[in-house]
Each structure stands twice: as C-alpha cells, then as structure tokens.
Amino acid sequence: MANTRTEWQTVWQQQAASPGAAATAADGAGLLVRLRAFEEGQRRINRLKTAALLLLLGSILSLFLRHATITVSGGIGLALILGGSLVFLWIYWRHQFRLADLDLAAPPPRLIPQAIARLNLQRRLFAVCFPLLGVTLMAGLNLLYVDWLVEYTPGQRWLFHGGMTLLLGGAFWAGRRIRGRKYNREYAPLIAELETVLKDLKNEH
Amino acid sequence: MNGHEREQRFGEIYLTMRDRLYRLCRGYLYEPAEAEDLFQEVMANIWHSLPRFRGEAGLGTWAYRVAVNTALLYNRQLIRRRPSWEPDMPVPVTPSPEDAASRTQLLDRLRRCISRLSGADRLLVSFLLEEMTYREMADILGISVNHVGVRINRVKRKLETCMRGNHGQHTD
Image 1 (cartoon, rainbow over the protein chains, first blue to last red):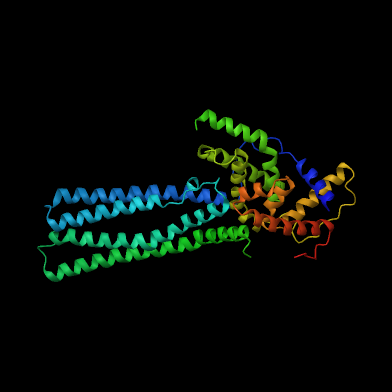
Image 2: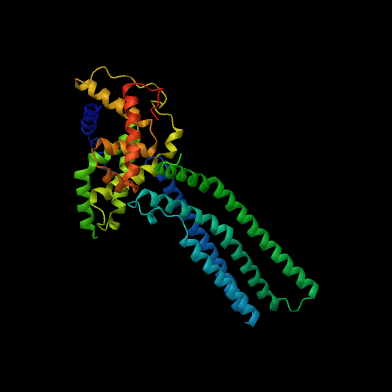
C-alpha cells in the first residue's frame, strides 16, 4: 500500500493551479462570503442608526438649552441621556462583528472560538446593554421633565411620567424582541456551523 | 510592513505556494469551480492578512494557516448545493494507472474518496499527499502531533478502503 500511496502523492502533486486562478480575488459562495456580506450590511445599518441617534440627541440638547433653565434634576437627566447613549454607542461599535478583526493566520482551534465569541457578543449587546440603555434613557427623560411639568397637577404629571415610561419601555422591549429574532435567524445558525467545524477539528463526534 | 514588502511577500507566496494551496482547495472541495472560488478567497485573505504577518511562523506555515481557516469557514453553505457527484455514489474502480488517462482517472478517484471525509480530514489528506511531516500538519492545524498521528492513521485506512473500492466497509 506504501507504493500505491507514493503513486497517489505523485499524481496529486502533479496538479498545478489553473491559469489565472489567483489573478483576482473574486468572491465565492460560502460562510466566509456570508460573514463578509453580514459585516457590510451591519456597517451600513449602524451608520444610519448612529446618525439618527446623534440627530435625536442633538435635538434634545438644543431644545433643552433653548427653552429650559438648567436645574440639578434637568442637568442629571440630560447627563444620563447623553452619557448613556454615548457609552452605548461606544460599546455597540466596539462589539460589532468584523471579519477583519479575526486573525486568519491563528491556529484554527483558536480562530474559530474567537469568531464564535464575537458573534455571541451580539446577543449580550441586546440582552444586557440595550435594556440598560432603556432604563438610563427612561430615568434621564423623567428627570428632565420634572421641571418642565411643574405647572401641571400631580395627577397630570404622574400620568405623563407613567405614559412616557411605558412608551419608552414598550419601544425598548419591541426593539429587544426584534434583535432577538434577528439573532436567532442570522447569528445562531452561523454559530452552530462554526461549532460543527470546531468539533470536527477536535474530532468530537 | 510597507506596501512594497507586502507585494513582495505576496509574490513570494504566489510563486512558491500557489500550486500547493490550489491542491489544498481541490482536496477540500470536489467541484472544480467551487475549489477555484475557494482558492481565490484564500489568495484574497492572504493579501488582506499579510500586514499582520510578524514572522513567528514561517511564511509557508502562515499561508497554509490562512488557507486552512478560509477553507474551514468557507464550505458550510455548499452542502446545500447539489454537486455533480454525490458522496454516496460508488467510486469507479480504475483499471490500471499506466497511461495519462488512467492517471487522470486515478486522480479523480482520489478526489472523490477524499470528498467522503470530514472537513478536517480532507485537509489532513491534502497535507499527507503533499508529504508534509506530522509536525508541520500539527503546526498548521493547531493540534498536537499525537492527535495528527491518530487521525492520519484513521484517514489513511478510510482512504485505502475507498480506493480499493470497498465503499460499504469501513475499517473503523
């Protein structure tokens, strides 16, 4: 069988790359391309989201500075809204899945868990950071409105604060659900595929 | 690494390793068109990763690792496609590997038998056919030499069984 194997090796090593095969770096199908498309799509959406959030924060800030006297509670509220949003944006950008962040020259048993961990971060982002942002924004807005609603009756004020909290809470709950579905649809299958690759590599069948 | 160095290293890899990396892709994917796409993806990733090359491993091992990682990340979606040859189909027996035609047949048979193996085993067989040492294989795959040895022995048996034409019988 050794001679046969030598013959296989000879035949195998006689294969040369087809002419021009490496001349271009055209995209093929597969997980890698999906990851790339994923990354590009995410980047586009993130730019839009960031622009929208910054616009909203800018509007709140300018509205506040033009029409309200800065009090302690208003200042704390504004700081919570701006600070919370900026911290969230920073974490959000930092945890994005970027293929370029992976070290493709690392040994596969190190690279694949790295890719899985990066994909898993997406879940933590909307499961932990997103609700925290919601609570911060709710607290900040309620504090901001304490002074603005001073002329209203206590009942009206409670109604306004309650309504706004419910509305914001609902929006964040819906956002979290949408992100959860997106994770299950897009990220979870990728993670499962990567885990299969890792098991195969470690021979854990 | 500046642009000139990057181009120089890429040229070096292309000149010295192009055929070996191409064969790795052909071993990993049976369909020639798919293997060619993978090869282009490998070369693209080598180019994009070159600025990170620090020389801890040799350029060859480094390029192989990029190729292996690309292959491992690449293939999942292709399972859903229908190949022109299904892994369950019987592998035709080569009458005699005397002339060029039978060599082509032998190569095709070899590729078909390789395509029956799992992703990591296909990579190992490619290394085996390139006459790499167990140490080299272990360095590229990031697993122990002993693990490589155990897997290679098992893969050899599977390959030999398939090449003999005993498709239904598994040796392990």
